Length: 463
Image (cartoon, rainbow, N blue to C red; front, side, top):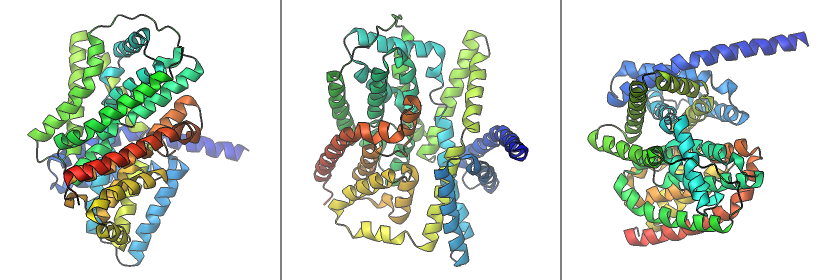
């Protein structure tokens, strides 16, 4: 028993030491990413970026879930096969890895996007907004849905945490319903918000312009959200009276911040055409958040805003095991499969379809793959490797197919961040808070998506 206890204590010390090393390593990783984004041809910066990323990956996999460890095992099996069969090309392999490390870098930066509205005064204003809606007869479901959608644009699934904090005063049943409706409303965020990593990746791969994406997406999002909120209001439950908190300019800031940050990213993308959209997201979010922290420090004449930002950034780096494990393993797997020629049949199958069927096929592949456990961003990168999406005769159509396929599966798969977060907050099994509670919503979304995709196909003339 002492040996087992000693091994456990030793393992704990190693874990503690490695976690302490993640913050400085992560800082080097992000700084190198910034240099690579602006100067992609600089070999030293790329080497530092890959080196720091590989180190972080190596100390992430052992402390990740069994799913992530299994993915790493499959990835290295494919890599080993490529090496043993003589099909491994080191230059192409290491030339392709930065794209996957870049995904991790953007995710780490995006984790700080909600920093301003996570401040205590803004949390109070979010609670006041919810209370104001409740006093006007709006149920907990639609209120949580609005907050889940608006805040989800900058907080990602962190918006669900805020909804949970605010709805704690409600009965357990109403609280679970609020979380469920917030998750459903969040399903519409990837369809339009360029701060969402899948949306940004899809824009880059298909070459669709952001204004065009909004033009085809916003009617669907608007109608879908309206229908969802009407249904949620019909299921209204009684909730405890929310405390009366005076609404001030902070409430307006909460609502405007996501819109302003999305607009700032698009402006940066226009002003810096040589920078990728994901690079523009990382640079813009980091700049805006840092400026807000510095401004708050100057106005308040105390260092707590900057210290809070530093603490949140460090916590994000220390807890980034899953991000490195899944995206780097996916990169190794995709690049190895490409070297082996295993992706060619996928490209051939999609290429053989009549043009009118390509968009539905893309939506089906993305949705099915996501439900089966393949994270949607690596899945789209894998599809692009086999079937270059930039060759689309109608970029908006293909982009919409990818995003709709993902949104339809978001609450059906226990492997999505949304279901994982909902399960953690509700203390329910992922299958119960996900597919069991949301299969009707997902079915309605699938039908609506198929109809809208068909209409868009006709309008864009993709025949």
